[in-house]
Image: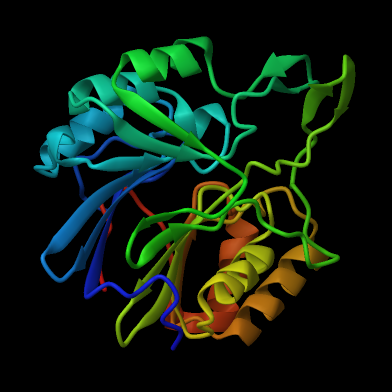
Length: 293
């Protein structure tokens, strides 16, 4: 296993928000994602919030039921600009109540970003979560295209290289460059990589607009470790053609993860294909799930 960036003694992941909830649980679902990562290395423990969904009251309600205090959060990662991952970031920072809370994201996350079908609609970061509002609420933005080490054993992927010929953004998105409307390739889509001692890599995604195979390959390149413990998050195959879903599952299977837990924008057809290929190594993602690695 690669030692690049060090390794965690253990990692805990709690699913704070997702489109669905655990069976018989009291949690609130929403179209969005939010995870809490708790990484421990020696005496050092860091609690990192990955995305905040789009409904802050529902997210905070779930956290209260899970006995997770916002005051415990040390840093935040925003995986990409979409409202269902970023809406309420300023409200969350106010709940955390600290100054200079690092908020990691790609340098293009605040660009204008919209869909045009069935009509023009902004789907990026909302005005109430602007740079100014985030900083006013106590956030310290760390915006870069490069990968960043958040603690020894946890890093971001940075901007993901598009290596495969079959993966694409997964939806028609637009932005404005030099005064012109152009296709948005979602270059701001980043994921989180955790290296756990004796386990390997755990990859936490938002929507995988960069392509989940591209993301896993970048994680391997960055760490020098090809042992994949798990992949958790959204894979954005909900509207993908069957051929792309099958190819994605084939290529993921070759990378031999011990487990995959995928939901949100993954889509039912892709979940079925993952289960058929991986059996009990695959499970659908739900609000309230906990992983202890």
